[in-house]
Image 1: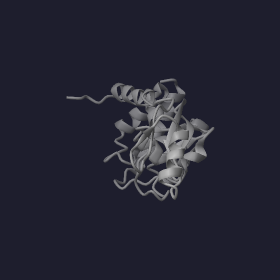
Image 2: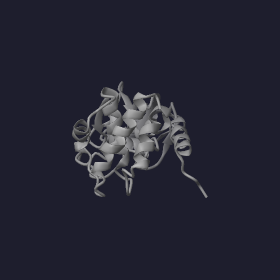
Image 3: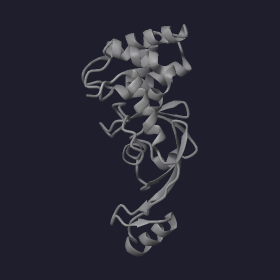
Image 4: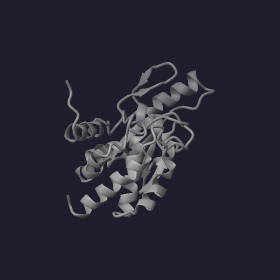
Length: 212
């Protein structure tokens, strides 16, 4: 029976990041499932066999400090790319309209809704996901506080809240309750855990300021 602790979760998050391949070794056609040895071969295949469909593209993304090549269709969002190409499932697929905050990531230091951002737009940018936060020991007090105050119930929206909280604390290590509420205003929780988020973040901020 698996026992989930912060340490085991941190290890799993770190492993998920390490498992992301840095370089593509095969190029699979999503329409007919044929595999090619290079992107140019795949592009030629599309021109010959699927001339009315846009060919997949290769983008290089920097995810949680790791550069990786990803083969995607041009219209894919960052959320879809994270989930289905990189096996990073923390940024949740929920509303898919940019209104719930469950897919929040940090791009170049600012929160972004990954369901509204094309992956192709993210080349050259630094992307942080909940996996990167979970793998970083610095943020253990924040995760511990969320658990202690039960600032989650079903847990589906929790990654988005934590990512938003991290972005806030990066800019403002000692936020007030009102500043926390404003920062989290774009994150929706159907379980209604709103008061507990501010309590958890305030506690984490205090502990982190003391080096705990």
